[in-house]
Length: 539
Image 1 (tube, helix red, strand yellow):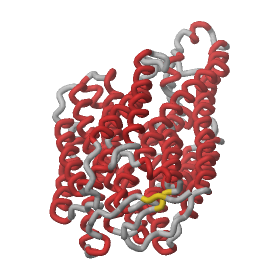
Image 2 (tube, rainbow, N blue to C red):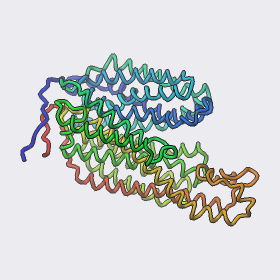
Image 3 (cartoon, rainbow, N blue to C red):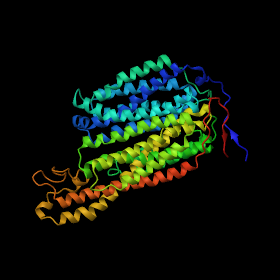
Image 4 (cartoon, rainbow, N blue to C red):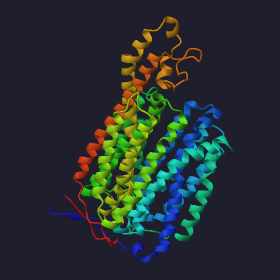
């Protein structure tokens, strides 16, 4: 069947050929500052949340501080990506920084939990603009053959922010107060805004098409109910509750309508023809699988460290630092290898193989696992992720016409974020089911062996939500005067170990699936220019 092409006849400026190297570096500095701002905020706020909840007495709304941000920052990513192709990257970045700073100031002066949730949504609206353009701007400045170092720096920026976030958040929360966890964004944002305003050109990909407002609305109507249905507390709103079912039905109806509309409009917000390009479709699927496996693996590690290894919450948070350092180092080294060799597929395959191996190793952990045992396994995972994740946007961009770079890049990120949300929900459900089964099989029989008076002092719900206790410390679920019986403590630790390692083995299966998918990825030679030749679409 004859191949079709995406028209790319609109006039544009080839910024990769016309801008000086100094100008490109200054623009990248502004982009990295904005990205650092957005990435740092996520980890800082997580550290400050306990103090915020204590001040506002808002435990019932605490999940919405993250959920509201997640809804906005995920749902708007593909929309901003398309807008950046039409309006130019500069306008979207400026908008993102300004809105993010406004949201930060409002969060810092919030007077109640509900206000904080609303202002976090505003932050998320700005964050989506920054995230959607971060990987697209290097595509404006460098042709694919010269782009790897820039994308590697973006991956490194995320890693550094994730290391500094908890440290800075803890310092600010314990020092001047939790409100400074939001105010700290202001100087970084102003500096990034100054660089963007003075150094960044429009960065327009050449599209002159009208904005697809109907598709934009339908996309929001599909994604927001989907994310809400996945994110709402299932103890309050079970999967079979009318609200959850209604949200999923609404998402499905809007999604079907979106596909019908996008097939007919001239400039769709979701460019469906791009998914007929084999390489782009495979990269999108890989991004989804990465999100599905990675976020839960990091999210539940502190739970293992506290409840099985027996370290403090602070030590559990610090245990992620070596993994992040491995990711940062490998992202930079891998980017330089791609820049020199022009080959990206071998590194993606190596990264997936290492990630899968690390998940298997994490799945072998048990009650005798030490902090060192966990740390070196996470370093292997960090090396694997650093090899693969920063290169997926590059592989996707290289497969599409330059004029669709913003939309294509945003779609890749969108699939990874959706995968992360879905993966967290599935992992949480698996964890709860396995943990309940393990408590029935191990913990309850151990408790039954104790004297009735001791049994009455043990709260099973607290044990499920707390810690089996570190050495020499009373466990959650036992009173200070009556430390948890050693046999029960071991049973609790074994229950948590089995439950969490089950998640890692499931992640290993996903990594193997991703590796098999990646083997089919065609390695298109990296283009040496940004000349917008029509891209053949495989029919």
